[in-house]
Image 1: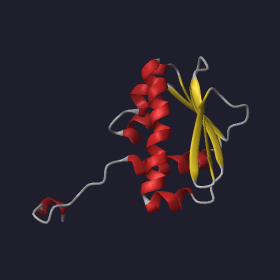
Image 2: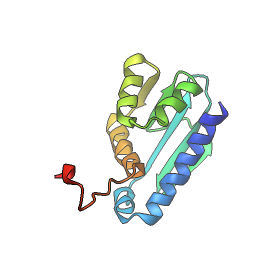
Image 3: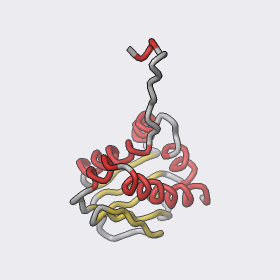
Image 4: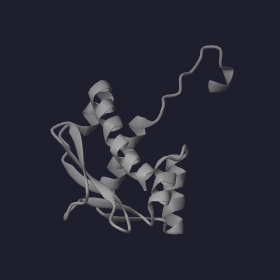
Length: 132
C-alpha cells in the first residue's frame, strides 16, 4: 500500500518537473483544466488538478472527477503504473479487470499523452545504423 501511495505522490512531482523544464510539456498543459483521481477499489487514492499550466495533487478522493483510474488493489496499481511497457500494462490491466476507468475517456487519452512526457527519450547515435 505504501509503495502505491508513494508512486501516486511522485507522479505529481515528476509531472510538475516536466511542465517546468520541458517547453513541449508546458504547451501540452497550457489552458487545460482537469480534475481526476487514481485510486484502489478500497478507496485509497490521490486527486490531481491541472489548472493554470500546473499540476497539484492531494491525498484522498474528490466527489466529481472528470475521470477515475481505479485498481483492484494497491499491488496491482503499483505494478501497472510502474511497468516499463506502460501502455501494454495499462491494456492488460483493463483486459483482466485489474483496472477500471470511469468518466470521460477523451480526458483519459489526453492524460496518457501527458504521461508520455515521462518516458525517456531515445538518443540516436550517429554510429547506430539500426536507427535508419
